[in-house]
Image (tube, rainbow, N blue to C red; front, top):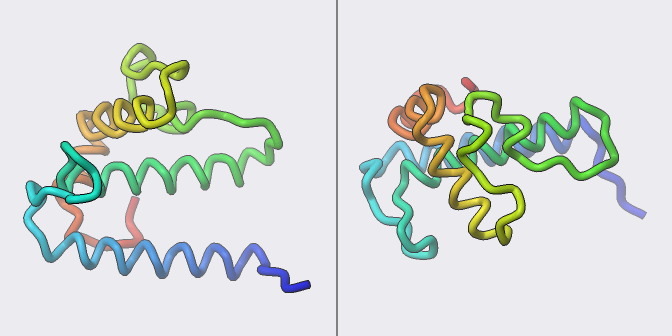
Length: 118
C-alpha cells in the first residue's frame, strides 16, 4: 500500500496553493468563475483560504469528530452562517461572510501577494 506522509501532504498543499494564487493573481478580482455561478475570483480566493484554514484547524486540533469550517474562521460573526443549511448553501454563505471580514477582504482583494502568507 502507498502511504503519503504528513510532511509530503503539507508540501503538496502549499505547492498547489501557490499555483492557484499565482493564477488568481493574473486575473481581475471581479472576473466571474464560470463553474461557480455568482462567484468571482475574489470569492474563490476567500473560499480557498477558508478551506485551507479549516483543514489546518482540523489537523492541528487532532479531532476525529466533524467540526464545521466556520468554527476555525474566528473573524466570522456567529450569526453570519447557518450550519444546518444544505452544504452548498452553507459554503456559499461562509465564503460570502468570510470575504466581508478584514482578513477575507485582504485575501480576496490582494491575492496577488505572497501565496504563503495568511
